[in-house]
Image (cartoon, rainbow, N blue to C red):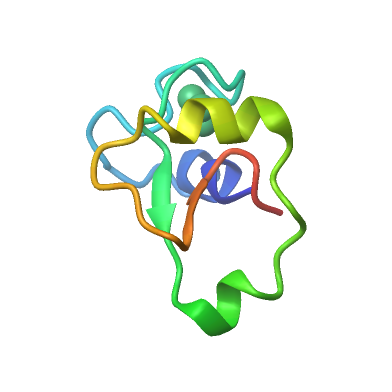
Length: 68
Ligand code: FES
């Protein structure tokens, strides 16, 4: 996942992924361009529910811990 990339590379994104991928926060919110978004698998209900709480939600938003 994108969260794995952030952790594995010790990227310093403050507070990114605080729930460690348990879909209990929205701090891993990422916004894709439409072309990339269209290639992703559909989000599951848990992700959709948590995305609703994301700051600056867009039509091409996803949770980075759920995108492979
Ligand atoms: Fe919390 Fe993705 S890391 S929902």
